[in-house]
Length: 464
Ligand code: BGP
Image 1: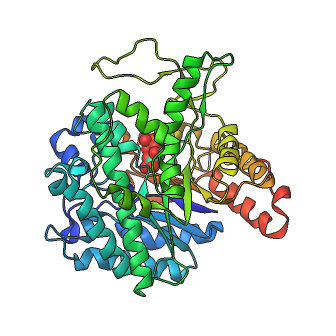
Image 2: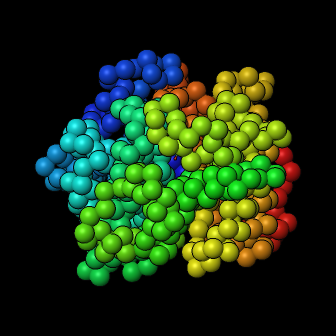
């Protein structure tokens, strides 16, 4: 049981100690009104200053592990040399986690491209893929004896979607072909990093039992109850582009043939070059992180193309019975976590995984404060409990699920939603020097973990 967070959403200190500008700082600088309440990337939740207090809090709740990410823009300068002060910050985090017996899960990239590389074309440019491999190699060598669990990317599907296909995020591009190349190049970058990891291990830079993984948001795809063949085709491509793409890459070292064929027919195939096959083959990992928030419900597209003239593989399907998190617009469907666990068991039985993110963001949580000032977030307790029950069922039925990390254990900066939706079991008081304060759910999870240590897991589900 652990906590998931990320560097760019927590650290703040965006210009401190030689940190370079990243793409979030650039977006914040050029259009601050795009951010909820005009809160840009600048301060995070003050983790740069408060990391020791936070890690101590994790320990006090009984958690055993914590994921964050190194910011590329903090670790390296433009000359690709180590920024000593940036490195020192991450060394201090490692030492602190060790001191408090918290296992650190370190991710290398969480949507946070350094701006100078973005200006060279970002993930559209293969030189940036090479630069990422240099960054990964440097990180493995620098922290190899301090970190056991490494991850190449968090949610590699998100930047192709948000920045290049739907154009919701800076630089607001709506171009399916460019999006496909970005997805492909990130896949290559993942593989090169795994390759670097294996080399670093052989050369003795890493702990002998160090592991490498990939974290993605997987959404089990569903369609209507009586699907037409076209609906099923929509499911095939949804599953193919978002789930199987990464699952095949990390278990077989290649991309799903049927998906590549369909892309080719639609002239959306990525720019594959000689030698790529060998790179892709390096992409196999030791385990996988599964972020789960909501299912994907799709149906056959009504129109063949979208408003930009690009071919559509599916339309959203609104399930009449869906229960929604209205603040985020995401469906809450706890059984999806089990269905995906079963999919893993059937289709990728050798791959171990853990729930690397799961959480609920709610707006205006101050409404739920009791007389003592504590936020009574019963909705969050219910959310986590229901998901954990389905995780447990999956484990009992043979899924190789190794654990659970709650996303956003401490309130943090949610990209352009800033601090609109709070995810934390620990509140951050923005107007009071980012002070941390337990919500009801923090005490609930503490009790859950305490009971789990005494009883078999099946009996530990405590009621709220
Ligand atoms: C995941 C990301 C996290 C986090 C979370 C909640 O996709 O890995 O970084 O932000 O979603 O989403 P949001 O912050 O957009 O509400």
